[in-house]
Length: 162
Image (cartoon, rainbow, N blue to C red; front, top):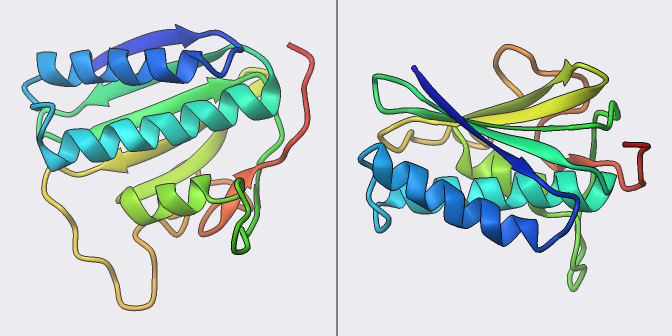
């Protein structure tokens, strides 16, 4: 398994840098920029890095792990030990959809404690998985899933001490 990582500063502009970095690493691993897998992974990375940077105001670490079978695991570690909390966006709300999107796009996702903070992770298999009727793919299944993970979960707003 190949692992690459990027340190992300506590600035929302870093999200764009993380997307560009991810695209170049995906291309280097043989996943073309125009492939649906790459588009899905870049969107997932954008959502997870945005949550980490906006809700903690602290640096984060983005990791991508490439499995020999073609699947990719994305992890974003931040300094907050607060678990994701369910949120539901209404109509014109501009926030509260990030982890709903992760739940809909990833095959699995969850979170786990890491050091003094936490890591939120998601996995995407090489071939699209058929969704279960009435359930999202993610639904918080898999190792390292903590309480509150799953559909509609989002990182609790509020700054943490970096």
